[in-house]
Image (cartoon, rainbow, N blue to C red; front, side, top):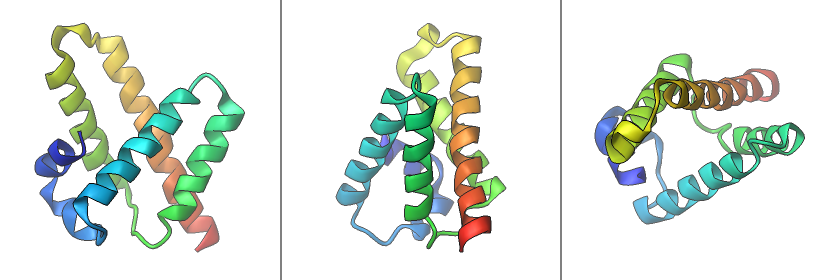
Length: 111
């Protein structure tokens, strides 16, 4: 997923200085933590805030969040195909907007 994401959004590759294999592992771990906690709002908030603080060194902006969101939703749609309903795609996009917006909030308030 990570490789396909950055192939779909090459403009974001320059933001990450860590080796690709390490970043892929971190990305999947973070995504897994968030998805696992989606039914526990308090836990999800803590996870997203923690990840937001870990991204303080990056300039997370609305256009970059949109690029990530669209690349991830497109990738999931391609991989899963017709099993992704419009409601599921909308839910995923909303979830990713929440995460990206939280990262921006943490950066604006705490950097």
